[in-house]
Amino acid sequence: MTTHRKEADHPDGQWQIQEAKNRLSLVVEQARSKGPQTITLRGKPAVVVVSFDTFQEMTAPRRPLSRFFHESPLKGVLLELERSTDKGRQVSL
Image (cartoon, rainbow, N blue to C red; front, side, top):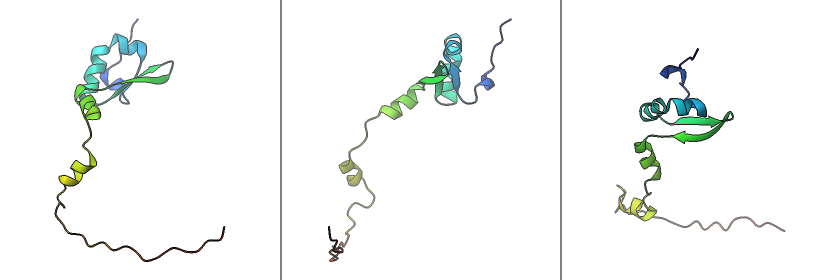
């Protein structure tokens, strides 16, 4: 007798490798609708299946810091900065 797991049987998104092979379409669907799905090998996490949209977000190039400052809503705000005259404390070595 073969027992089939229901979609609700994987609320934590974790699958044994053999079951993931047998139910790949369900693993993929849950990755798309519920988030990353972990596939375990010998009881330990081995790989994660994510939706293509999630993959693109994770691998998108980050914008450089200079661009972040250039696009800042605070661009053009004048700041008055002063250096502290405190020289610190003397420490004998």
